[in-house]
Length: 250
Image (cartoon, rainbow, N blue to C red; front, side, top):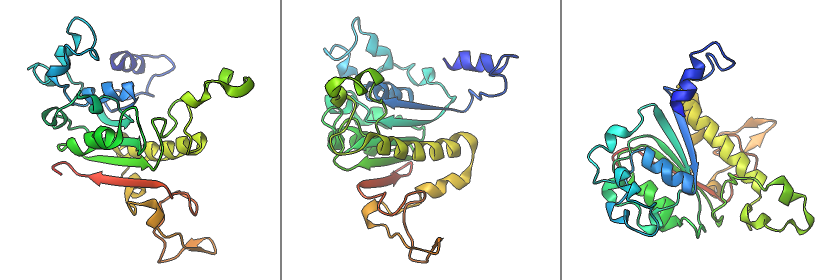
């Protein structure tokens, strides 16, 4: 895919000069996050090759810690990743050594009530185990696997009688549009920094870790000295959210 995009950018076609494949950011949700973590350097647990969770014919083997060529196959053009509820950790797909192989900056997003990918034993465990990368973890408190609403409710379901099946795409606690806007807000800033070198976007991550503890103080349209609220959020808008940061080596 990256080779194709790079080729399109080098031609006289409609994408000429618009794509810089050498500075790529990848977003992966759920099983997409499972693949993303691996592509960022998180080699799979070789003990899972013959598991019923793995693809047939030992295909997982080349993506595991036991493959000496694994790291040579990683694409250096991937400069940052966003993993939304990545699946696999709660099923033993990674061990500490595998996660330690991640060196690409990564932004993790999860719901604290995710019962599919897991939270403490899932996304948070990956976040904490990727000790050789700079990383953030945005948590939607009490949200499930659809935290951040990465997949919208299909129109066919949304406008059907009874909206049967819509629960597969929604969260019982959080509003989809609100979650998606929050994800877009941070992911845009994250990629602007890592892919475009816009250092001012780091200001969006310089915040009080728990949104409920931040102070919103604005008078006559101006922030007062007491204002510590999350940049870009209206009063009360950061309640229910937490943001954590761990630098490489932590």
